[in-house]
Image (cartoon, rainbow, N blue to C red; front, side):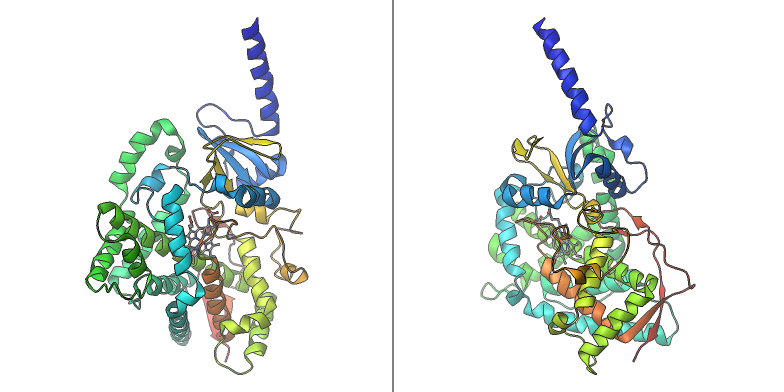
Length: 467
Ligand code: HEM
């Protein structure tokens, strides 16, 4: 009799539980509900029914999907210590074995994060800021040439080079020379981001993991290329290393971790790998989207240009100190990050223990996703969220729904640098050039899903010198 009661109770609990949250099916869980090829959009649609926090089984991985900024703050700030770690997914183990900053957890992560936080302080970044200025000159010169020769401007390639050069300076204190070796890294980096973001079924289906580990180790050609390159740079750097002076990130890492064990070397190489990848793809994808928005919304382009032109008042270059006088340009950048959040569902976290958030129970080891795309479409915080409208950020000082860099102590470590880098690149190119579509049509705004959200169709634009 007791057994029957328990079964009945469990059955009723299951029914109630699944009427408030999406219903899973055996093996696949809720994966069958990701039908459009754009998971961030499917997850956003589900939040219209199930709210800003719901449970979603990625195969047999219990996952909490968040798009409510109040709950995100509650979890990542007020209860932040319980949600600091990353889940241990095969694609994250592959190549860096949970070393470095982006995929590690626990005390190991605390130590490396502290080091990178210090390295990213503005006072420690003087070199890289000087180099940004130089990189802007290189970008403008190359665009001048493209315009003169009547070629089309390829935002993806140009911004990739720009952001790679900035990271290169920060990590190695070297100017980036686009020789064949570096150019050959662009493809593998894109591939790694695409693979990581695809959210392979095998990543989340635990029974398939042992085979999947072997499979990616055997088939992946992109990561080994990147890591070999970085290892070679590390070995060269070590030869010239002077313990008295730390000139760049690699010096700081060598000082902190030494050159002793294989594990230390893996920590160093994995960390520079994380910064190189995280620091190049996101900002360059955002700059690419900014050019798309300038082309698709010509009236916005004119407004940004006029504001910048008025501010520089005859000077040939925009500086970071001009930013405070260009609120519309700042709003344009914010709106692009809202409209096309480069990190659509972010990098997952995991719960380190059972915990209640409001009236919702989150079990230990649950995977936690912030759906940044869903968050930026949350109508409670953004009027007409499907409309691209930079002026929405002119109306009010701050909006708690705007969180493209996440929040709490594991937010984006490169946030301030990314904002500076994007402002300086965008404002200078718009001072110098007018952007137009090649065929007079709007550029297709559809995204391609990956760790970084990119536009599906790589596009070129025509540019016209302004001054
Ligand atoms: C538009 C540009 C960028 C956006 C939107 C962005 C966004 C994000 C987001 C959402 C996360 C996940 C944080 C979390 O787990 O809650 C993240 C992590 C990270 N970002 Fe960024 N990011 C950008 C640029 C950069 C740049 C330029 C760098 C390097 C200089 C960088 C380095 C990192 C690193 C290392 C992490 C992992 C941090 C950790 O696990 O402790 N990002 N970023």
